[in-house]
Image (cartoon, rainbow, N blue to C red; front, side, top):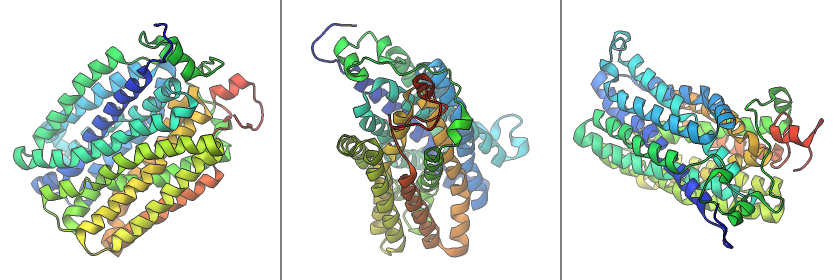
Length: 445
């Protein structure tokens, strides 16, 4: 490491690479939501079949969140992220040939698409937990809100870019070529991450002593080592843990409406064209790209002013409650453009508070952030498994206003559960708890 008075800025370049990883995950995640309309017409799928295909990704994503985070805690996020990006890029490209692959067509095109999307979800499952793990080890505690917010901003940028980009490509080239193009984009990112990324700042030749001191604090403490084996019993007996998981399940239910059905809602319910729908359906993601870093800044400032518990709690609750109000209003506005803009603002408000869930995991145990965030994101993904199927079911029977009202109630309930979440406390069963020698209920960290 170079000796210098001023700290180097390697940690922010690492976060920039994490941002690129998340942008790619959302490009490869969202392509099916746009392609679904073309595939539905070509293969004569009904809405229920499309719903199952859209939910396949989420099943793989949900099931492999915890294994992906656990392996990142044990083996390091550098290797896990490189492998994960390569994996999901391959199966994204293979989606273009899904109905023709030997053995898959026998079971029918629905099963073929389902399997490919399942395997894309398996690869992408490791992305956010290992991004969160990297932030925990690379960022100072006072920077974790912004660090998490910056890679989560990739959700907005990736989603905003993917909708018009994929819609335009599919309108000109058909639905198959965009899957091939998206798959190829993963190759240079794997190479760049492997070349520059490291598991910890101590391992990076570009980090000087000043930057390392800033990250580790005055004591120079390195977070306790993790064996990658969380003690689930003590962890799951905690009220904070259950409130965090249930609240993120409810957020996930709402988030995945924007990931899966929103483009079709814009086209089929609000009457936009296929290409115009791609542009207007990007409104939620443009809002997310703007509000997520603002939420990270607000989170860190609130922590410095009010402490960790209320510092994470206030912006999380504010974002969730505002999101619910905007969803309910947007569902009822008759003018299509105004309605889409209000619903987009609802997504932005939700993501303003979202960084606090991820920062809370870092606050609880930096050493087990991969596993804990994988567990939390599993809960959110289970909400995403339910959402693509339940949302059209409610809409078909009671109308889209009621479907969005249900989403509004879910996001507000998730925000109110933050009254039970105490970010910054040591959580029993984590490496931080073991290292501290805590035997009973944790105290404030």
